[in-house]
Length: 469
Image (cartoon, rainbow, N blue to C red; front, side, top):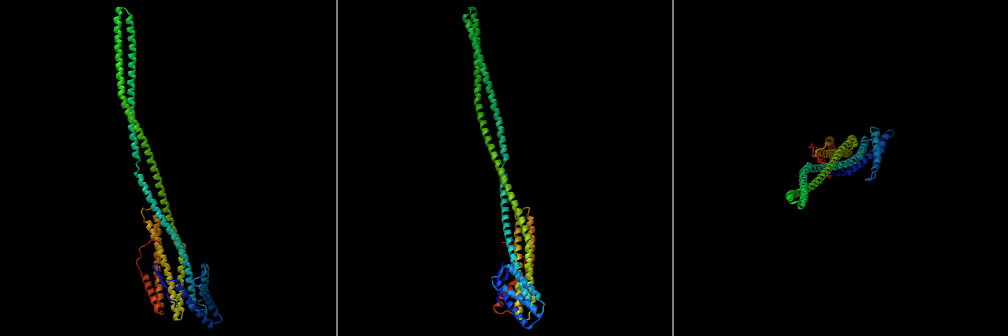
């Protein structure tokens, strides 16, 4: 019997293809030996059943003749289907060994299961890309949401109303100062006008005074005194007008510095107003820019969230559609292989053949369990990732879509886990049936395998979900 070649991958004990290939070849020897005996003992109509078995065995032997160098998957698919059809057609026919026919059909089913499992691996690998997209979009959603919040905090810190209030205050001051400048200007102009009038009056009076004095100098003596008195009166009026003009000019001159100070204040306020208006414009532009940046970040986060939902739905659609079909094909073929090897065991007469068939039955059940374990682990990991994103803060509208998808995948994982334990138990039962015929180191290794399988098959609490690698 071929030695056991064991390893443990992802917590599930599996047999390497080396053991399966060697064991299959040993079964071929058994099958061909049975055919040789049948060829010498059966003639006539019995030859047809034996010929079918012989043809199936020859085709299987030719398929594995290249060792590790196997034909393309499409050719192997056709070959396995032909072998399975020939072997099943031979079962129950006279001249065909029932055990050999059943074992050949089981080996073909196992081969078809492996091909279907390869397709499962391809689809799971494609989903790995979808998981990477999930992570990337979630990172983008988180980053853009945080960026939008940062922009919005900056927007809240920008107080345009304060700038408006500052501008309003400056305008109020400008109005008051401008009014003061206007008032002072009006007063100065009024005083200066009055001063000019007084000067003009004084000038006119002095002209009149001169005329009177000229008349007095040529007038008779009795008139001279009266004319001089009139001239003196005009002189006094002119002096009073000059004095009034001087006072008015002095008042106007005293107001000029006040007006100049008010004009400087007015100019300063106008400068402040221009600066405040520029500041207000810059603040408003900054707020507008930040609002646009925040809106863009929000839109980017929303787009990422929508892609998360779409990717989650895509994962569910693939897992429940094409991937589920691939799993179903692979699992169905492995189930047929397990059942076929069981029928071959029951029909076998030689103890060593029954032991070899029990090993093959255990290996087929083990491969079935490995596929189920992989399905459970991958679906559970994908569910964990979807669930963690759905529960992430800040929350988002599409989170419910991811949560629903996570639940669907977790249900798939739970069902696969339960079926995995059942398949392991069937592998244990088959290996235990072969244990009696195994000796030495092979027995020790098989006992070690059985111990590990029993541990894996035992009911255990569902492990905590870990995101998909």
